[in-house]
Length: 240
Image: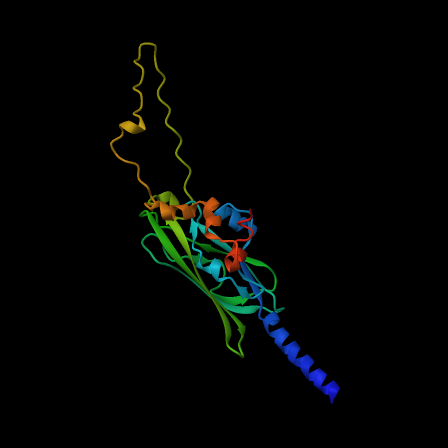
């Protein structure tokens, strides 16, 4: 009777252990992507071994005009592919048409590490900050209808320039050289200084300083108090 009780307890503990262990995957920005977007040497995990990081999901990562695509990395840790659905939507289709992916919107997260990309095609017709909505649903178990939902945003900068239609500026035109001067030619007039120009410079972002500081990677640590989940989210980004 005692042996039977011990075996029963063993199987109960085993069942409790297997549940979180089997329902596990990673979803993150790898080192190259974090360095490209934020200029920092770290990996940014949205889901690590099945644990969802709400702080990371709530942080809206700015995407500069010269970057036209995003890269995400994921991996199923269950020993089998995990079914997913993914959708990406632009909130301003006049400035940025619907983004497109290089993977299917319905598929399975592989057991090996996979990196996929989302293209952000600015139209080049206006200056705008466009919020891009990304939604991912991962089915852990069809029997129990266990689904992990991830919803997060990007803020893409689009510029009114045909060279930014695919998110990558075209090369600048070659400068026009002045004609050669003969000894009798008068010297060319001095170009006007910036103080002589009547038109003020245009701030494309047109953002208050309290929001512009988010675009400076060096200020990210100000968003991260060294405690709780927020420190876990940016622990590699905010080291003293």
